[in-house]
Length: 391
Image (cartoon, rainbow, N blue to C red):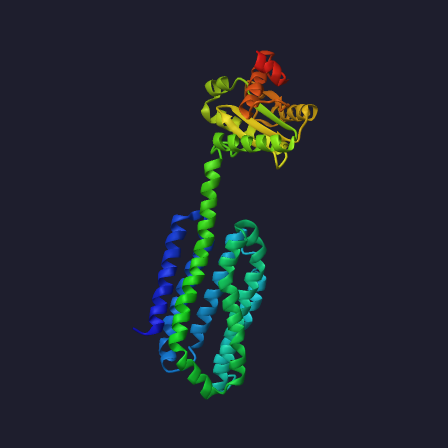
């Protein structure tokens, strides 16, 4: 089997796999279709180049153009994947179009045969190197931020290495005569095919690392998030509470816990239906999330109850925060025919001698029930820990 045919089959398989992935994962479809198109274009280029390479000649212009277009859509797919849109189109076109234009112009016979092959190879090499190195440079900050340094290196290393290797091949193209260039192409046919197989595999493996990292991140996020409200679920907010409790014990920083209960929620469900109840819970969660700081925690504790963990908040400050939360709920929740939606809040502030995080939550729970008993739509501060334990 010709070496180039094996490479073409490999790229065709990659393209088919990415096309299947695009069908199965619609959220990432734009980027995956880019990588599928790259596989198809590289397969086409390799198939059309077989005869010319077997004769020690430069592949036809259409093969070089297809390979260059494949590289363009490939790196554009990374841009699409990272940013949700192709952010650098104008720069990518500025690199790809001159190389494609040069290939087309030289193919029209603007240079003698031997010189034409030299300058076509040079235009292709410089276009390929520019695309790979430019997109690697542009994608590095976002990739490092979103996926971590190790993943960023794994994904972008193939682009850096291939781009720099392409630049290193420019000098021989400029200095060797046509006869030596033909001999070099003939001698590098097998090594070139092996390099293509390896490079194609590494590039597509790097894309797979990108995709798997995002899918695993989503799985972790879904495992921690309440599907209805978008805040932390019971398990995740308990873990956040324990971590905050340990931090409070080590550093003696302020810690407050707030339990929020939507008033008359059963009546909302009975009168307006569970869909309306779900909307109320989602809006309450949104209102709470908008009022707390980035380093505080909010989770759904159960049913119509939410738990907030507030860091570095003494009693007076935490009480003011609770009043702001209560007012935000009353002002922004969905208006129902029976009137506005309100909530009762119970606040407990960690004290010296506090036994456990669970004890802190129990004090907040008792304060929340007292708020309901006193007429709802209010905040009650929990009794001190010593009194709660004595009771």
